[in-house]
Image (tube, rainbow, N blue to C red; front, side, top):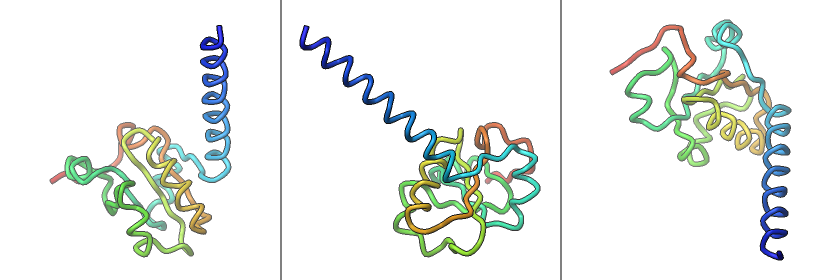
Length: 126
């Protein structure tokens, strides 16, 4: 019985944390449709937070590859005074990247709804 109660409490805690993170992310980063993203990404810093092998397989024209795993070490490559447009494969890593950037003082953050797999615009592949 004690194990069951523990599992219920643990599950509830995980669920509450997930809900908290979801709403926190909504406050920090603007989620843009493909059309909204296309209309503004040329005036912003376009960052692909996927790993280099994913980037090499195809990326949005003009994007820089700064993988989420390297973001902390490469923050100096991103200007805090300009808008930052982020994307990943599906949208989850770019949300985490936005949270990390927000903590470091970046305020104008946007990411592509659905990520690269929903992108229908121009791409570059090696």
